[in-house]
Image (cartoon, rainbow, N blue to C red):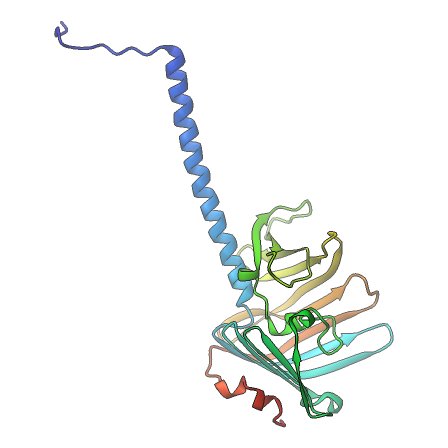
Length: 267
């Protein structure tokens, strides 16, 4: 027996349907928001990992650069030091012809030292995408003046040729940067985010160069691809290969290395 004060609430079928649709829509929205946030975090982790892969807090490495063209080959040996994301110093140690040529970057500024004329040349921002020592790597590639994390927008993508064990990130340069690429696609391993390759496209979406990462090695506690192979797509028979022979990470590096005075010191 119902109380006289009790109220029976009835709902029309159409109202009930609208309520169900609202609940489903709200749950879906929450799920998608959570999924998008997780994807954003993941892609940022991947880009940060690539940005810092060869740097860490500090790094010091012995490297070899082999420049291949249809007409000649030449090999440079060099030492490189980095500190954080803002400081890089490179000194060529062989061959004799290029010995003591040096490069310094501090923040947004970069200088080259040419011992034959005993002259320090400041590299303008417009020259950062120019060739470093006649190689297929640019000044920016070597000293990392630009940052994938700061100078690009990025998102996860699934290209048609995707393979199961790789993840793919598309990077678009921000409008206020001096970067010449229209976009970059990076493929990384799913398990450790180590890069496998990068494809660089111009503003007309033409593939201009391919960077392959090879020969995974562990130096101390850090595992990296020890070989980087840059292949321009518009120069048949050209490529440049960089090989890390020795490397230490997160060890003490003297701040005096990253000075213009050090540029002109002989090895």
